[in-house]
Length: 137
Image (cartoon, rainbow, N blue to C red; front, top):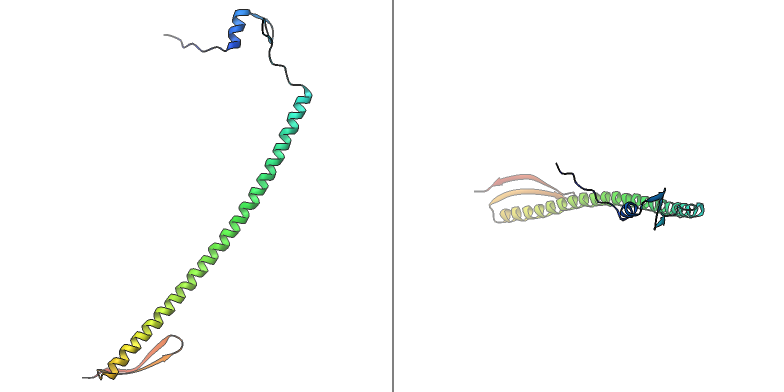
């Protein structure tokens, strides 16, 4: 069975060709990357802490904005439900008034033409009461 060859890095090739003199040192290339100094580490740490604080501030701002949007959404939902309910009541009232008017007109016409005898009473609160009714003929 054939084994797959794993690719080697350029540093590994130089090491194989030139040999390793001491830990971390390759003949002809010198020492590898220098370790960071303590001042470099402190500078990087300070920069990361500053970035972390800025991200925390942004997170808090975003959280507050989210809560504000949730409250606004709840208020708008309640307002919409109230408007829908009021609209439903208003439509029912208007339909009732139209039907009441049409029925009154119809029965008045029938009464005037002598086809029926009817006595209606209409009050202001959307109520049409039939007092007496019978067909003529």
